[in-house]
Length: 140
Image (tube, rainbow, N blue to C red; front, side):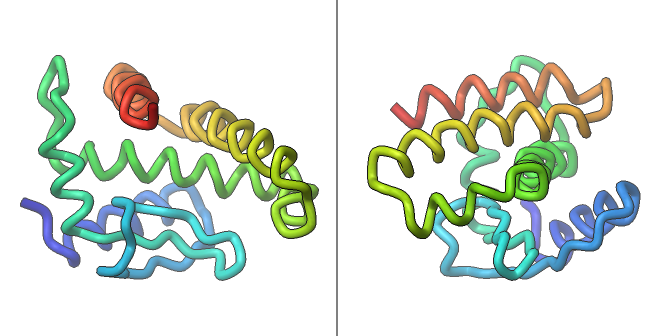
């Protein structure tokens, strides 16, 4: 089981390693394991959600808890990269029509996985791709 301080340390180490200046916040009201908040430039996480999500994932090759946190962090960093790359995103999400927002959110989700994957070390690529596939199945 991962505790708040374990998760926070893993996140901060990766951010430091990648030289990214992003805030880290624990939020026990978060309904997802982890999220990136563009307006506060923060990675938020809920350790209970992370542990539950980790238990739900059935890796073909068992990953350590630390590697699991890294995998979901890389996906969130994909959002960070997407928002930095695509400045129209926020305007559309705030002022766009519903169908436009839906299409954009699907695009952002796909791009965040792709951009996050560019940060993943070679030894975690298979596990990252596996989490991505399982995540797609659960969203349906």
